[in-house]
Every structure is written in C-alpha cells, then in structure tokens.
Length: 465
Image 1 (spheres, rainbow, N blue to C red):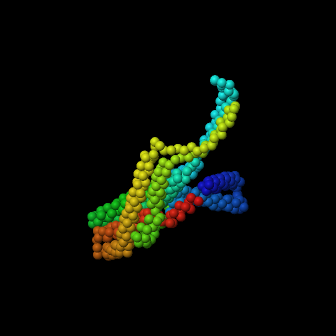
Image 2: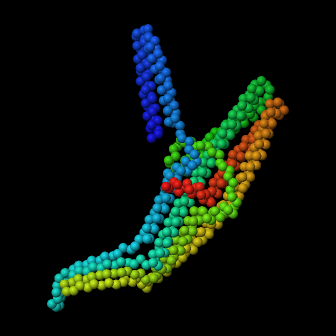
Image 3: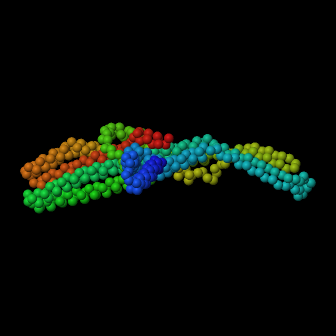
C-alpha cells in the first residue's frame, strides 16, 4: 500500500511537469510569433519554469524515497521469522493436530443401534402369523481404569508437542540472531577492508610520486602496489561475504523478507552471564527440550497403565425389545468382554519398552544439554578474555606501533617496509578483535538458546496472541 501511494505521487508529479512543459513550449512559441513579450508574460514564464523545477525535484525525491529499502532491526527480523517462516508455521500446525488427539481421547464411546424386521409364518401348527420386529441399543461404558490413563497420555502428548514447538521457535530465534551477527561481522570486516584500501591507495600514490622524482627504489614501489592489490582483493572478498551473509539471513527469516533489504547495524551486547551452576539450574527448570522429554515419559507411562488395565473386563449396557403378533419381550442387561484368549501381552511389552526408552532418552537429553552448556560456557569465558585482551591491549599497542612507524617513515627514520609491516600487524589485530567480538555474541546466543531465556519465551508468546 505504501509503495502504490508513492507510485501515484510520482505519476501525478510527472504528469504535472509534462503539462507545465507543454505550457512553457506554447508560451515560447507565442513569444516568437508576437514579439516583443510583455513583462507580465516574462514573470509568468519564470514562475512556471521555477514551479516546474520544484515539482521535478519533488518527483525525483519521491522516486528515490520509494526505492530506498526499509532498515530492519534484529527484533523486527525475529518477529518476521516467527510470523512467516514455513517451518515455524508447520510446527504450530503439528501442535494443533496433537490437541485434536486430546479431544479424541476425551470422547465418550458412541452407542450401537440395531433394528430388525420380518414375518412370522406357521410351519407345523395353528400359530398366529404376521410381522415381527426387534430393536436393541448397546452403550459401551468408558471405564475409569482405562479412560483416565488414555486421557492422561493424550494430555502429556499435548504438553510434549507444545514444548517441542517452543523449542523449535527458540531455535529459530537463535538461528536468526546468529545470522544477524554474522552479517554484522561481515559488514564490519568490509568497512575495515575499505579503510585499508583507502590507506594503501594513499601509500601507493605517495610511493609513485617519490619513485617518479627518484627518492625511492622501485622495490618499495612494487611492495606498495602489492599491498594495494591485496587490499583490493580483500575488499572484493568482503563484499561477497556480506552478500552471502545477507542471503543466509533471508533464508533463516523466510520468504516475507524481500531480496533487497537493509538492516540496522548493531554492536553485540557483551552481557555478563551468571555462574555455571545457576545456568545449569535454569537449564533443568526452563529448557523446553527437557520439558518435552519429561512429557513424553509421562505419556508412555500412562500408555503402559492403559494397556495393563485393558486386561480388565469391558462392560456395555444393553436394552432390547422383540415384537411378534403374540407377545412382546423387553430385556435389559450388561455385556461383558472377558479377555480369555488375548491378555494384551504384546501391547504391554511394547508399552514397557517405550516407557523405558523415553526415560533413557530423558537422561541422555539432560546429559547432552548440560554438556553443551558447559562447553559453551567455557567458550564464553575464553572469548570474553580474548575480547578484553584484544580490545584493551593488543589493538591499542598495534595502533601505537603503526602511528610510530608512520611518523618515523615521514621523517625518514624508517623505511616503507617497516611501515607496511606495522600496518599489517594492526590490520590483523583489528580483524581478530572483530572476529572475537562476534564469536562471543554467537556463544552468548547459544547459551540463551540452551537456557531458554525468558525474554525469548515472552517474545514467542506475544507473537501467538
């Protein structure tokens, strides 16, 4: 709607400009046919031309505004992914399907109706002949010892499906955030590469001038040209990596994100995480993956109880009536299904195996998540220390060395090679800082995914409303 409105503004302004141009041409032709032109006509002509120029500029500005893509924040990208990503929508549909199974488990068995009709004829004696009919109604009774385990299993399956959906959406948020930080890293590398390209170009041009006047050797000129070419190659490679990162981010968000988009640059927050024991306790209490595994254990245990109770007799209430020309019979009673031949041995064995498997999977899942959290926390400590050292010491020392080498080179105390070496050392230290900073953001994002941070859960729940 916004783009169509801008297009209409552009079309209207263009039409007005065309009309004013036609009026201008008409007045010019009249001026040539009827000289001299009056002052009022001159004023009108100048006004029309100025007004046309203003409208033309307005049309061009509207066109530029219509073509400029909107800059998206990380929260907008996450919201877009949760609203339009096909995988997220499929996970929500799966959760709804399991809720339908709960309605099936709670349903009461339907009654069975039977109606018969026919004729009665005498074959051996003087019996009354005529039409005969019968009907019967059988209502199976949903016994509590089978109904409760069946409903409990369905409710546990619903909790497992809901926890699985939340876990998937948390993983989607983590994926989008990882891709976003990857794009921020590539853009920071591109900016640094462009700065290096500008600096090496200045050095190369300066060396070319000095070589032309005979103040330096050709070897130093070749070295400066090589540094410039390497910086140019690095810049082009950085541009390609930015495009690849944007493509991966669009793939994570979904088709709703247009091909041409821009993001708001955001430096990752270097937040301080709580100690590892606190994170492990949060993992056990909040992780949707563990909640899903626990719900699956409850579901399999309820299913085992259902199969064991299915060996008990099943009851049905039955009422029937038989009508013939001589009399009417009405009968009421119970229908009992007794497990004489089938004692549910296979079903019980299968349910026991499934319950044992679910418990083992719960233990394995808990151990795996704890191991992942411990590994991520060690990486967090290492990355935090690396960022601190690089930011506060290495990069500053390398920058100081580069400035000293530059001043020494200008005063002739050092050669070009030493200045280029100092520049290369600073460039490597700065790139290491960029990489370490975004590696730290990636590790923090992984820890937030494992612990299921409440901010993400709130964002997921707000998106469902």
